[in-house]
Image (cartoon, rainbow, N blue to C red):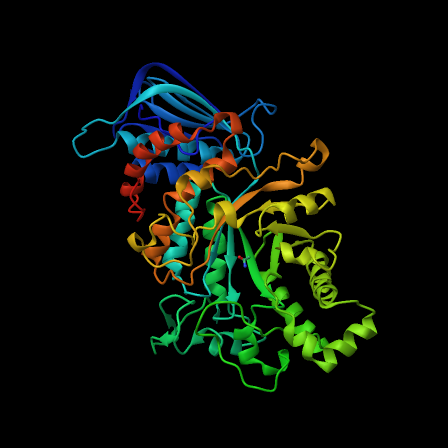
Length: 507
Ligand code: ACM
């Protein structure tokens, strides 16, 4: 395997004769508008920017393509020739991805024993298969510090991933400052203790150590900018009406019981769920309003997964409310709840997305679905004309074990998801006809952090599996081959070393 082991694999790569030699004299020349990408590239390659290349000096040129047919959206061309390297694209995102490919090539050739980095000449034409190439990170079960979020965004960009789905709230901790409801982070961001060992073990033993943290609105704004510079959209998630124990602990009037709750200290699904009083709906809407002020994202995620309906079944008020609304069951009540959120989101020109459970009681017309309990929910939603992101447990749950023999790995939630399995992920279901295929926006991997207390551990679970995911959502099916990928990955991990990413060793 040559050093052109690019991940995700580009659409077309042609080897050419000769090589380009790097020296301090190489300058980067950017067309108008591509200066931010030029700055990134200069930083990655340790080079200077220049307005114009002097005669005779070698240059890297970032050019706006005139061929609008060939270069659309995120596509790019990269040509390495002996005197000049050219990246061309129609958009800043395209230039950015071309620059990431060049960075990968450069990192492969760079080493302490090499005085002059030489890149073999080649020509690449590349563009992504899907527009949604994502990762979800749960920061509720374990809080992840801001500098790690930035590192992660860098790593996503390096693999041409463009969606960061930020799971900001859950039973075990509320992680986003909401000005109108200060208790959410004053109290809801901290739990008294955390379960030791696996959730299945009895008796339950706790560490008696408070755990928590949250992001201020200023910090959120900083991350939104940081992500946008790297051509990553952030999709914030406020999970409702279930997974709300931390919020109910702060504002008991949101719940169904008289009891005072606390942010949950162990894993599994909480029975506690929001009630459907007008002031509770208003709470949820107010939170979403602040979230939409902070995040410019086209999609706002409202969760909707694993909302146990037991408290709703037991509550007189809720049952009366259902009757009044003419709803037949609790699933329809959840849909009624979610539909109101869809209205608030649509009023701001945004789109609602939720986990596939939101299909169960009927789905608002403009809602989109993230299919996690397999792909059937996604198929049904696409057939009904809804947009879909595929994220099935079978292929992309990165909290699952990376080895069959669990005792060789750090404690995890369960399952077995080796590299080969994630590599086999295809977001596009074969059974969808051409007209419905456009509803599959793409795919994403999810990292739930019950058993992942630190950034280092998160990286261990993410890599190298996220490298495989990147190829599943970027590379056309004809270009995919697990053996070929494995060979490229053996080269690619040296780049991960350079970037100081903590990955699990290759089998
Ligand atoms: C999920 O894994 N509960 C969406």
